[in-house]
Amino acid sequence: MERLRFWLALIRWDKPVGSLLLLWPSLSALWIASDGRPGWWLVIVFVAGTFLMRSAGCAVNDVADQDFDRAVRRTAQRPVTSGKVSTREALLVGAVLALAAFGLVLTTNALTIQMSVAALLIAIAYPYTKRWLALPQAYLGVAFSFGIPMAFAAARGEVPLLAWVLLLGNLFWVLAYDTEYAMVDREDDLKVGIKTSAITFGRADVAAVMASYGAYLLLWAAAGWALQLAWPYYLGIAAAAAQAAHHYTLIRNRNPVQCFRAFRLNHFLGLAVFVGVVAAYAVRT
Image 1 (cartoon, rainbow, N blue to C red):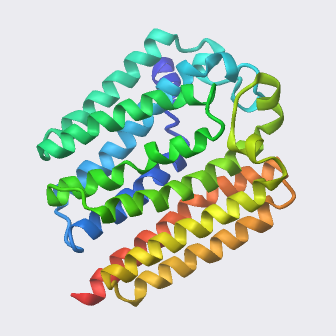
Image 2 (spheres, rainbow, N blue to C red):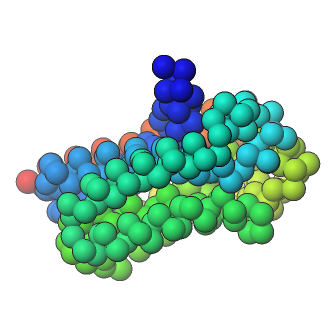
Image 3 (cartoon, rainbow, N blue to C red):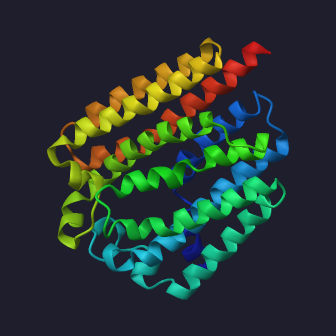
């Protein structure tokens, strides 16, 4: 039981926020790609696959970042960093979870399978971008948004321009909330030498976060307009915008506790957009 407890801590079982941040845009894209009628099996594949891949990603990330994590107060007690789980064990757990997710993808189509391989490679590379990329959060935006084109591939067998517009918009959302996250550890990251958007933006960090929220919501609103989605969609966008405005009040003083709170609240913002998508198709039918 003790090993299981360590494994659950490794994959952040008690912290589902990261999975939800992946889930809501993927499901929104699945509803849009299927014109509001996704099959129940595809919904299961994307829900289960999202949780499995996020968990696998946590295991790989902890292995890659273990030396850095030791120097950051918030992450010093993670299972790999503290020695409770070995590097080999963490990689094995991650591999098993990734294979389980791939098994689900195999029930879709060839294009989705090919894209899942690309998604895996992008996710594996992410931890190392913090060593050389000034905005690793932007790269994470690609990794955390790849469920969008995969949803179109699974539902339609193709990935239209619309999918990439939605991915670009979602990338800005990831940049916003992960910069909030990076603002929490800014001082420790400066000492360790990690590159983050919070460090790169400097005193413009709050403005950059709010501009990123704006770009995300504008691009998704424009996509909804092009699709002629019904009015509930724009209520969802408005609810998300109101939450983004609230985030400004949380992060404007750069208090680490409040910045972390803002990050954790982001899944409600994504949920608002998803509910708007579902409701828009529901009232149309």
